[in-house]
Length: 150
Image (cartoon, rainbow, N blue to C red; front, side, top):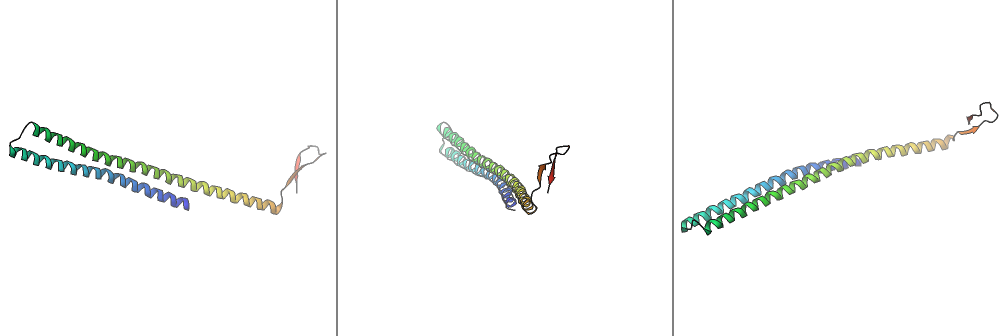
């Protein structure tokens, strides 16, 4: 019973880790999309400010390009963190599944062990109650074979 409960708990944990992996991945995608959107808004404001001031080339363009690159790097890092979180959750799910299988196996082995132990005790009690047959050689017989005596 205990092994079955442990197996079910480990299976449940495995399933929850699978859901966690999906959530981690989705959260990384959403957070990265938010960063990209914020970057686009900042880029739009920077272009509008540059156009309004008449600075539409040279260092203004370099600064805008640098901001765009930094924003893309931030979005990639956030996506990567989400993927790593999902990978870790998937690995934990696999470990939980293995633990569930191990608990089932241990339960079967424990049950078999208890059965064999019980049979051994029963045989011992039977033997002590009725005595153990002994085998003694019968000398002088024509076959010289051992025959049980009670």
